[in-house]
Length: 104
Picture 1 (cartoon, one colour):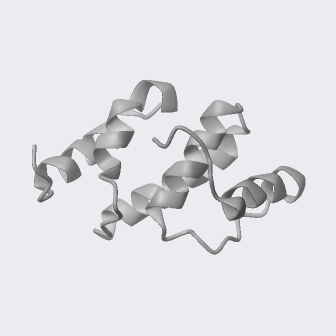
Picture 2: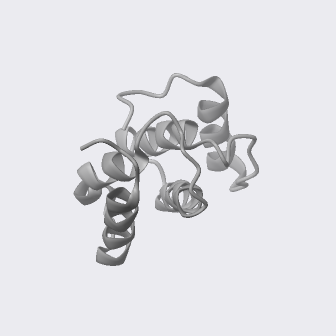
């Protein structure tokens, strides 16, 4: 995961979620920004529903086969314990990682 959130839209989305609970955003298909949101959730212990929404959006991106600049399945698997990923989620990510064109 990125070491910090460096996108104003991500930070504003998190703040808006805290006050309104809405999940309408412009970066729902951008795995890079979703990873930043996830890191923000972890770093600042933001509410579990926000983290769950971010994880769901990332899983949807992975399922559609979108390829961001990072290899999000590997990144998520590395932090699986901290993110509280279920065995089914870990298995899904592992399958995606093994089937990808990523160089090992």
